[in-house]
Length: 120
Picture 1 (cartoon, rainbow, N blue to C red):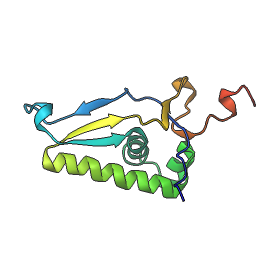
Picture 2 (cartoon, rainbow, N blue to C red):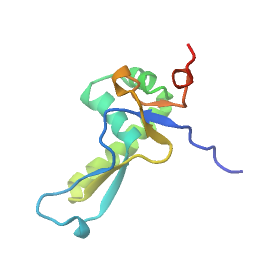
Picture 3 (cartoon, rainbow, N blue to C red):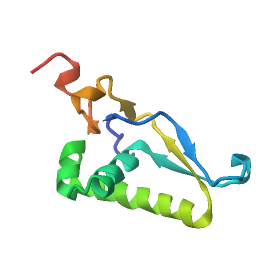
């Protein structure tokens, strides 16, 4: 049985595909940790904006369990890179698309929803 396909998610407010690395070391000499935009969005909401996990999950339109998995994975990758002096690459996989109207406060969410089809 094949795993369920990931639903499309939208994230706004991020620059597409960029790197953080230790100063003075060429990127070609570093191990790179891939951080997905949804992991970064989860960390931003919970750690930077001090939102409760339930509120952050509601804003991202995902379950609290999914938010917890994204937080755990993102924090582990970020701490590993900081402790070991590795680079962090922030990516938007195919299941994440940047919102066409970030000023509407869409945040991260699943699916195209009615807002993109002209409904409601």
